[in-house]
View (cartoon, one colour):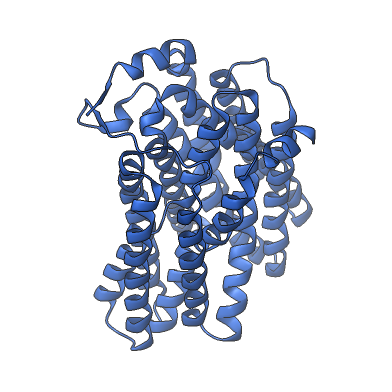
Amino acid sequence: MKSYLAVLGSPGAWRFLAPAFLARLPYAMLQLGVLLLVQWSTGSYGVAGIAAAAAAVAQALVGPQTGRLADRYGQPKVLVPQVVLHAAALGVLLALASAHAPAVPLVVFSALAGASMPQVGSMVRARWAHLLGRSERLGTAFAVESITDELTFTLAPVLLVAVSTGFSPVWALLAALVMIVLGTLVFAVVRRGAPEPMPVRVRSQGGVLRLRGVAVLAVAFVALGTVFGSLQVGITSYSAALGQAAAAGPIYATFSGASFAGGILYGVVRWRIGAPVRLAATVGLLCATTAALTLAGSIPLLYGGAAMAGFVIAPAVITGYTLVETLIPAEVRTEAFTWLNGSIGLGIATGAAVAGQLVDRSGPSLAFLVPPVTTGLAALLVLLFLRRLRQETGVAEVRQTVAVS
């Protein structure tokens, strides 16, 4: 635990961590919140699913562009107008839903709300990288961020559903709006750890994704996202099929808790194995543990399978963030982190959609086929491009592709 205390004790760290946590809770609420809101307004799960997917995809695609702007012009100059746009888009969406507007404007403003979501999580990781450099403590800092993600994605749905049930989805997303505006503005004002603006131009049509190894990591993170999305559907539907629908929440909480524990343990180990090999190993192990869920025929086995999968997924995510930081120059750090965040979001949406189709067509157990297939392919991809992920060749080559404008 000394390594965690050392990282969290970095001078001024809590000044940006506290408001960032407040701003990141709504990030974990948006997709489910839009789903509940639009279904409440229209009575249609089909329209609600489209609106939630539109928000997720828009966030995943536009987020990296705001990360690029933050690298060039500084975090405050991007966050302040971005949170204003987000407040306007989400405010209009809430007004439309309250008026029971047609589906098209609801989907459009859901997409706009997703596209304008402030990328505070990526900016926190950029601050850690700026503060700690490429030291051993950076891996522990990224473990802290993974644990924070687990907390937000565990607490946010509980808070969202509680307010939605007690009042309405409008009040739930209104509370989320207040949190993200306050948290983002305070975070933007705190300059501790914020990287200085570094105007750059990446000499490739694909931008940061064309830099050595970044696209490989982005694809791997899509696969990691499918684990979250498909397990949500699989655990919910399979528990209901076994006649114990109420067990779904505790089972998924077990998955989150095991991920929390895995992230903590991973962050205190001093690894002698290189990050590329660790990534291949953790993603491959995730394939094996999620495959075990396909054999689960009872609630106790679902608990066990969820715990094994959860224990592995946080180390895989932490390794990916640690690895991308070694492959890219500081000038595009936030954009690269945002691509990984967006890739997980795309994976969650894709995993949930594919698993849902499989459940509807062939039964709940088939939802558990999605994560071993996607993570197995991701592990093979990482192994295939292992040389491109090695730091000693990656950093030098990447820096030659970036020109200061």
